Image: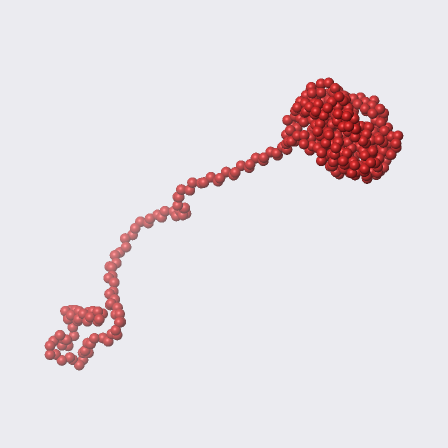
Length: 445
């Protein structure tokens, strides 16, 4: 083993060192030949070192350094202790925070086509739309353009001596002259009021009255008769029939008796609904009349009529057919000139805001409200034509039936320009009139 060989060499080295230094024992040298080992000197034998035992090397004492006297040194002033400082690391360049996205500007409320159309109209055009004028004998085309009329009502003189072809051509010329499609209307009730069918060029015999038709064949006969009538009017270019008559009249001597159906409020209401349905199926818009019911009153064409019945009586009787017509979706109602004391004893129904509110708010009607002709004596005797037209608009009516439309158009226009009638009030009526025209297919927005 390496460790044993090293130990032997070291032992030999020590012995040699001791001999040289004079420290060797007087006993014979272990290197002398033939010398017997002394009994006093133990024999040196190899130590019994177990296998795989590691013998550590002998420890050599460290050399000592001679001490020198210390040389005094001048005291060194210590530098003041500074607090530790952070390393001078340049700051990282700051990254600017991203600017917040600007709030998107709110999109303007979209303007509905009807509002946009009305806003594009001149004041004169809007005022003109409020007039359903009696068609003049002369200058009918020129007046359409001058007064921007909403429509014409045709009377018997407009069919006298004419043919279906000539009337159709004339009506087409009215429509061509107008920048806004016109309402072309007529009173073709049957019986006493037949503007068209009284002339053989349009029908061999005039249409019978609703009362006569109902007596002949009930509501089925009414349907057939009204379908034929509506088809005739449509073929001529007429879109509005100022019918059906909703009045309930029980006195044979009363003005409205021959023009009314002459049945109960409920049956009259069924008649009204059937008429509206049949007319609509054949391209004609109907007008309920004469709100809130003529009853047995006198003729307002020539005199003032006053109705003293209570509101409860009216609601049980005369107002029933009107409510049934409203529920059926009628587009227009004509108001009479009668004073209805139960609603307003101070003004005729045509000029009464209270009557208009009752129709709108209590009965829920949101269509076109039409006046009866504003040149009837029940109106002109009290108010005159000009003031009556202004009062009619202020009362909430939309469409003014007018024979003196030139005078009344200018009166309403001046009232708007002076601020007596607001433009908003005019716009409300124009919106309803144009919507009615859209509903009957005259125009699209």
